[in-house]
Length: 218
Image 1 (cartoon, one colour):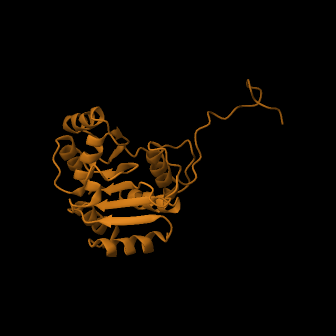
Image 2 (cartoon, rainbow, N blue to C red):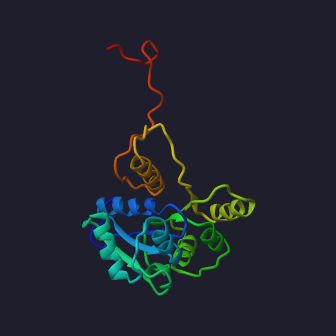
Image 3 (spheres, rainbow, N blue to C red):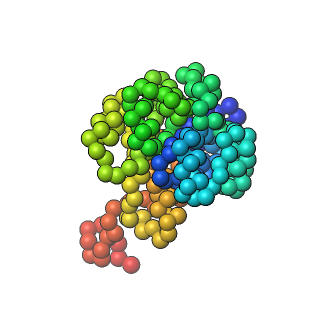
């Protein structure tokens, strides 16, 4: 899925939960795949980036675009960044077509406000638009354990049409590094939208033992 001229973009939203490296890798893989990306980073996410990773992410859209181009090292694809509170942005309107929206990571505050129909920033407004238009919305909650309020909010969103995809690791692909695990989490999230990003060792069933049905002799 590439970003042909005029192709609908994917919205990548980042809220203020701990898991910002997943968002950065998602952006990198999308741009490598020549996708068009509408990126919106919440005010809380900018704070988390600075607190956890020591990154000063600019708020001004053009400066932020230059920051991410340099940070990811990717010049392909199309990238447009938005201010966290710019509710006049294109993605705040139902007439602006997209391939879908992913909130990675999604804080439980963001989850709760979207579930309640409250939009205090562009992340929440864009999510509300995707729900009302019946477009794909993937929410990746980063919190544990989930209390009853969290579960009810996530159930409300699932009933409204969102897909809930918490970033849960796996080991069947035999990760050797943190980067391997990050790639698994990001790629599996975007599988939900039908994107083919990066390279992933996918589950093909248990390894066959010599002499088992279907095993070939060497």
